[in-house]
Length: 432
Image 1 (spheres, helix red, strand yellow):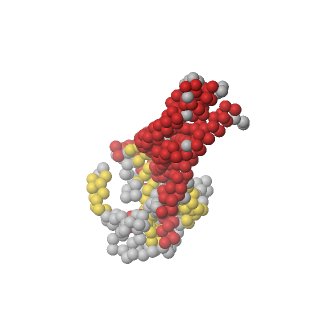
Image 2 (cartoon, helix red, strand yellow):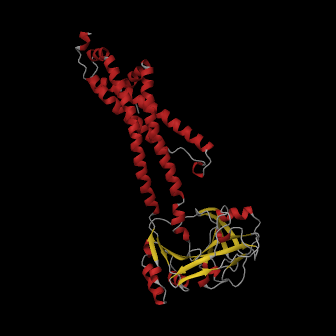
Image 3 (cartoon, helix red, strand yellow):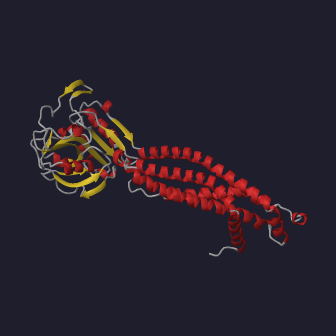
């Protein structure tokens, strides 16, 4: 696409004006550079922060719109959940328990299923309270010798939880809920548990509280679930080969929870009715709809607006610098502009020349600021050791914001000088 003659003339003459006044142009670019760089830095920082905050939020809390229902502590909670959800693919029952994988009869390396970087792990002793009162819990690991075993949070699933928590497959396969249940439970561990298996020599034996015997698990895959504590996921029907359904949930690890899609919200009332019928305290039952991602995006948008407003103030200083230089330049070139008007140049083209000069200044400054921002981010990722900056790429949104900021600054800084240049009377050349 070819440029019109007027636009081409404006750009050529504007570029000649920048070359003729290099020092003045450079000084106006310095203040504008800081303003555009501030806009680029804020936009880049907000995009990186958004990626870091939202990367794992759905893995941990669930997809927005999911209803999470916490069932009361009762011997039949897990059984009622399984019976109610049988045959449905828009709801999943989750029973949280614990398991020790490794040598039998030893204390795990991470008591309580704690992350491996937590010294001493989590103690399972102490007091526990529910609707019936408070009682003491004995630490099952007390007095046991240390050995090659790790403790994981064992999550028994009635269906595919990835509809509600989109886990990222790191290796291997996910649980197949269409096949027949296996006698040797197939489990999928998260990356935190996989790190433990890499660090230690762990035998393939799994002990679960309430099971009739220790079992030999089949680790078929690894997923990134956004958690730092070791976890393992297993089909509930495979665990029922080894233990009663009431033993699949442990209050220490979270009990029983149900994930409901928007199409299954009626299930909450059904569960409440069935639990009430068996004498469970339904006042302990709680539910909430997941809006974590939307809430986080709203908070980030407010923070971005605040910092962009501050960056805009810095940008205004650069605009004032361009405006000042533009007015001074027009004052020095009054005779030149009057002469151009005398030989037939239109007022619009004359204004375009001045505006093209400030626009080119703004674009050159924006390019320099974007380049400085990209280099700064690369240097920061090299010298600052943090997961947020690992393999981070310069956000294209920050580059677009920089170009827009440069164009806006060029227009605002050059509009008044352009209007003043267009109003110079032809008679001025006669007085000169």
